[in-house]
Length: 481
Ligand code: GLN
Image (cartoon, rainbow, N blue to C red; front, side):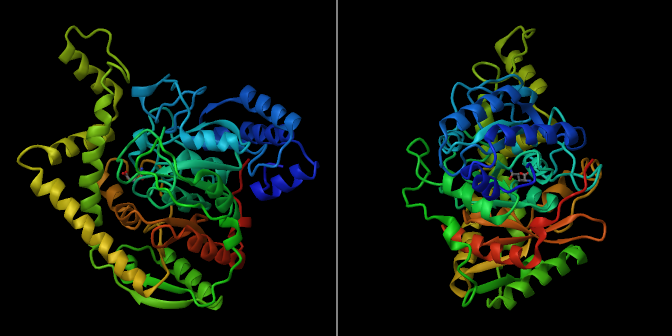
């Protein structure tokens, strides 16, 4: 049963052929079989999930996720489960409330299985910055899942849940989805509520689904999208039924191929897989146009100023007073701040706080933060101009498939550079997704990125569904014990 999609499981539940308890039991057995290998779950709530499934079966119902077991990244506040953000700083923290998206999932009938691994405070591209365990790519032992939503991607790819929620500040949903061969979408900034998402960089963070196929992504979006008065950046705008758009066809769609995204450093296998995907979209009736995003080369520099600047401010609340680990042996207030933060945060988080504090400091603010914000506007304008010529942009998600755990972990700059193709969508606030488009010689998945203008998630889903129907990669699964 665990091999079904949400759509398939819902059909069987609706017809009474299976129960939610059976679904949960099947997924729990799957977790028992593969979790040693994937290390996706930080917290698993067996009893809670079974009790919720019993209740779902007893009550019955046809809400869109009724009876479906899901996992969520450990960055969302959950009332009854620990929320650690993959950090010692928050070990054992149980929030007093649920994030809006958690409420929405549960109102839609979903069953919460547990919380999955991530890079500490969502900072990273491999999930190796998780303080508790490093998840492994289901496609190849010893390889990274990507990050920061690596536990989500591993759990979905290994079918240890039907879908998962992640967060994406610079690629953290799309990149692990690509490296683990599943679908992941970062919606438009403001489309999904951030209330109860522990903040990394508030002007970039967005919540989104990681799913086994494109239809499930549309189903999840139908549930999580929409206005929330508790998030001041959440937009008042109707949510379309994304599932009805999937089958509309690509006739007349203009697809832009941004030159700058196929440059130096792109693995030839990734290049080929993405170009094969583009050919399939053209066969389906789309017109392919060459476009340019001239400020692409500045994206990494701009992101690695703005994101750490916002992070240094957001993470200042973790000082052991109200939030976070406290060093009980400290003998003065300053000493307590210093040692609590030194003990609680890992190296990458400290590095970001240092960069961000420096970039925001008096004397450097104009040269770094202000300048980065101005270049950010130029990057957004690039997209505005590109979307006058096309409806959709296609590219690779990452320059290479997954790499070995440990291979790049002592080279932060190499990791920052690997974000080059995903961070522009966050800087511009536009929606983007990753959909499988190939498998390398080495047996590792390759994803295609699709980006569209603000609030055009429907166009992304339509094109991705079309590609998936042609390449059938949603049916390809990793071999696990
Ligand atoms: N890899 C990027 C970073 O380390 C993006 C992370 C994210 O999207 N949360 O900041």
